[in-house]
Length: 436
Image 1 (cartoon, rainbow, N blue to C red):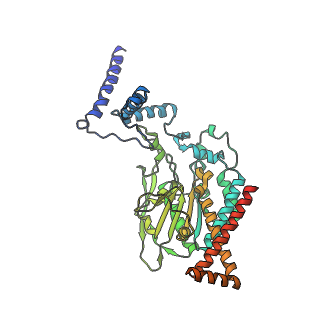
Image 2 (cartoon, rainbow, N blue to C red):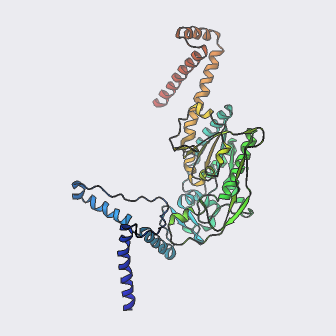
Image 3 (cartoon, helix red, strand yellow):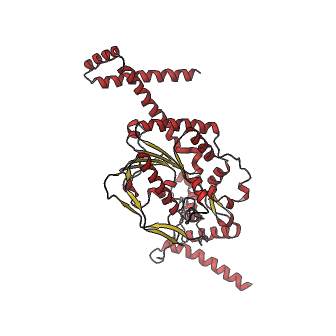
């Protein structure tokens, strides 16, 4: 027993001495340590001032800096996480739930599956009213609005959710409410959530990974292929051909198929099944009449898999991916803020696709429709005023005289007068609403 205590004391002392040496002499200790994954924010070395010294801020920040940058820190973190996971089935990653048989979830997916984040049928109906109106106005501009329900991990694997999370089920979910409203309103959509669930026991290849939160790479490719064929059908066009050489089954999980497992930062990977990966992905532009439509996408993280498919940019003439409608990504260009949602901006795109998974349906499209609705309705009402002017000879005569005096075209004068009338009408409506 004494020998064991001495050994343990010596081991701990060695680690305490070795750790700062690794950090202090990087030229000597050149071995590589796998970095931690996920959102990791390390404390920078604080700048010394007497003010933060006397209020003890400097000491606390410097102590955190030492903890975050000590040698072998990543090894210690993984070792600690592994002990908690192996002994207590506890994970050290924000929002991660360890399910039965070590299936991994995120809390927001379970909340969506059980209806705990349900926003209410009245809110859904009001949103659907705007969606339907936007869809109809976009059709007049020859722009296709496509709503895509991405699958959800909790809906796909409900049997592995810990029982304690199922006690608060409300019986109504945002997904179900939107689907019911879409069917009643005739809003075009593709429901991959229901489709994946129905295919789960018949699909030749896995559509969802055990330790990932997104659809499998194969599942994403399958959905993407379906979306392309849908666009070709509704737009009556022949797009660039997308094909693969085959499907490879690999135990080496790639891209997002182990993304939650990576976030746990364990010493050992959780045992999983091999996953399917399409290989030899090719986009062929050969042949006459190939069309590359302009695409705007408002989506959550599920679209990243499609966006990052090798050379998928060849499908589109222009692609604007608005991540949660807050950041805009275009292949080959830096991230930027989305362009203002004007009528000209909307008219630029042949297809506008909204793609969200169940966990984010409580904030579906992130105010895209709230922005597009008044933009398109303003344009519609403006055109109504223009038509009223064009059908009134006396009105046209007055505007012709005004146009000549200003030195502008009659058409420009008609638009200016229509805008003035519409602005006055909207002002009266706003005043009436405020008074009420």
